[in-house]
Length: 110
Image 1 (cartoon, helix red, strand yellow):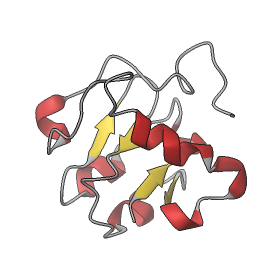
Image 2 (tube, rainbow, N blue to C red; image 1 turned 180 degrees about the vertical axis):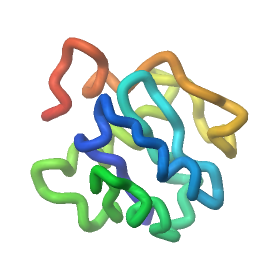
Image 3 (tube, rainbow, N blue to C red; image 1 turned 90 degrees about the horizontal axis):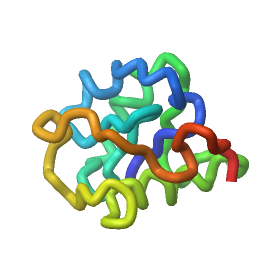
Image 4 (cartoon, rainbow, N blue to C red; image 1 turned 90 degrees about the vertical axis):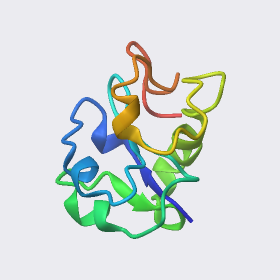
C-alpha cells in the first residue's frame, strides 16, 4: 500500500517529503506533489516530514480526501503526465502539468 498526498499540499509544495524520501518517488507537478504508487515502499518517512500533514497511508486517507488516491495514481498515466514509472523523480524534475482535479481554475474537491 502506498502513501497519498492530499489537498493540504496544493499550492504549498513544501518539499520536505521529497528531501527525505529514500526511493525518490515523490514527483512535482505545477501546484502539488504526487507519490508514485508503484514506486513507494511504504516507509512512511514522508508522513512525519510533511509540515502540512498532507500525506496519508492509502488506507487511512480521510473519506473526504479519498479521491486523492486516484489523483495520485492517474497523474502518472498517459492521459495526464505520461510519466509512467520513470523510477525516480530527481531525473524527471518538475512536470509542467497537474491532474485535472488539481489544475488551475478547478477545485481540488471531487
